[in-house]
Length: 552
Image 1 (cartoon, rainbow, N blue to C red):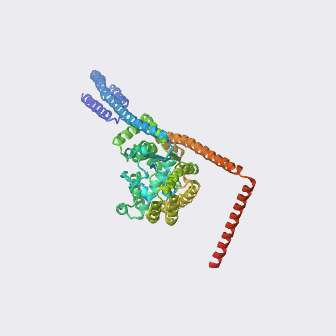
Image 2: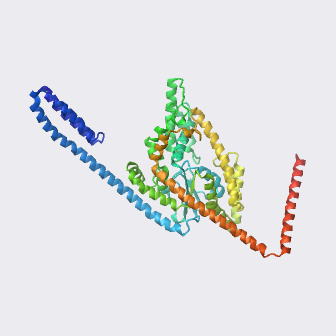
């Protein structure tokens, strides 16, 4: 009888425990039911004297098992309610976004390809946007024309007279603060796998710079000192203001652990899986921070739903989509419509073609505006050039070091109206080559502190196939958005190519018409003049060479 009493108490305790676990969604009902039944079957093998009592226990067990269904039903109902709530939240946001997008589409359809008063460069991190900013936009736009606290500085005041360029990591929700009918948007999209790998690498690279300090406290103090007023720091920039401190803390913890162990020999040559040195990639991908900021980052940024969004409902919408993947389609459709309405969509992988498309679509229009403004306000432009030559020398010294004079002269050429699309491309290629070299040098110096870890194009081939598949799965929305961006790019590229060919043919026809109207005597006169000009050019060049030899 004592065993019978103990059995009853154990039964009640076990059922209560399962009920609690089920109600907290930590144990499935089916598992609880199997556990309890297994225990009950074992208990039924007691001696014949206890059989009658055990039969009562079984009847009691059936009654108690009924109550196990109650928390399960509540859980199911709660889950359905939560999904229903999320569905309403996401649909409400999508409907509101669609109505604003249709308004933008209506105004943009008047002339989608015309550059408006304000150019908003929505810079998705790790897509090559920094190169576009330094080597295209800074050549085309005056410093005075950049919006206040524009590049890398979050939360700015766009209500500035003559504000023509806004380049920022802010998401599309910033459009709520801008004059929609007077704003053109551009962006660059990258293959999601390459973007995620690059994000991981850059997080490590920047965090590793702080390892010159003896401990994390010293590093944090230094970070606070460099974040001065009007000085751009990576720690001010979204998303690095979240990712870098997190990775920095991890690197210091692993360095401290190595010191405790003593000598640590690292035999693995895969920098994405050196647990002794840094957080392995596969673990990085599965962290709450990565889920909230990195995965499907391009889609959320273009949709205006990052954790840096200006929209009050962004956090709830984003988390609903992350919890219920089926709701992601609504966000994807909004992001696609946003791409459709943009003046320019580039692709990181199509570097050369994207740059050419930008020069012909955006650059040509900015240069045309410069020519027009020069006609109406030549004196004002001259004064502006003098100011820019001086002010440019103090901007972004780390990346345009030793290139101050060249940058200033390029800006003057653009603003004077003498720059063409062809020379703009030449300037871009020289600038981007210089920038890549300086960034490569800085990366090598940073990663020395966590040697033998090093990131190159070759080391990316060592990332396991299952990890690549994991990235694709976690970034399913970005995968679809990238496919759509490629379709847009192909159409725009074909359109611009046809336009260039058509313009060239028209020019040839015009030239033929001009020469066709000339008589033989006039043609000979033109040819003779061209020959004399050519000989004069050779003569001047020869004199210059002789003069330079005498000076030496």
